[in-house]
Structures are given as C-alpha cells and as structure tokens.
Amino acid sequence: MDQEQVRFRVTDLAACVPEGVPIQFQGREILSGPLSIELEEDAANQGVLDYSRRRAEATFHLRLAFPELAAVLEDLGVDPELTRPVRAVLRSQGEILDDHGFAFSGRCELGPHPVFPSPETEAAVLPGH
Image (cartoon, rainbow, N blue to C red; front, top):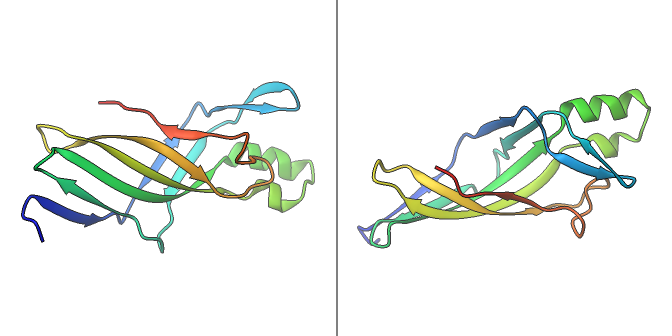
C-alpha cells in the first residue's frame, strides 16, 4: 500500500439537524421537524486519506429519520411504510486540513421511499469548515 494513502473504516456517526429541513408537500412547504442521521452499521462505510494530494474521500451508508414528522403521520393512522427512515449513500470528498481534519462535501443517493421519491428529492452535504 502507498505510504501516502491511509484507508479507514467509519464505525460511528450520529448527527442531528434540530431545525429540520424544508419539505414540499401537496404544493406547500413545511418544515420536517428534527432530522436525525445515523450510520448503517453493517454497511461498507469506508474511505481513504491521500496525503500526496491532501484529499480525503469516504462513503457513508446512512439512515435519515424525521421522528416528529413520523409521529404526526402515525397519529393520523398512515401506512407505517410512510414513516420509515430514508436510506441514503453519501459519497463525500474534501481537503485534508492542516489540523488533519476534513472538509467533506458530497451528494446523497437516496433509496426508494414513498414520501421522498428520488426524482424529486435531493440531499447533499455542503462544504464547510
């Protein structure tokens, strides 16, 4: 293996977007309520650090859940299929920073979901520091 490259496996990830995200529903924009993001534990969550190019790449298999929205839908008696988490694959890349951290960004490929059809739904991690 090239000494300038370090392969790694991602073993833990949990994040929350407390303010949620905007969702278009029946021609109206609503807020989703909190969004929770967790790693799919049994998937190939891995990456590589390429120090020769100062680039990092990683693939994350994620579960995106909207607990408040799911609770409202459950209270309305909808099909449980509508309240299940969204499965997604995030392929991200970014610069290796001077402190050895990363500035990842990338698009998510969303799995099939009845509430969030992939031709109409997009998700991404935007660049940040």
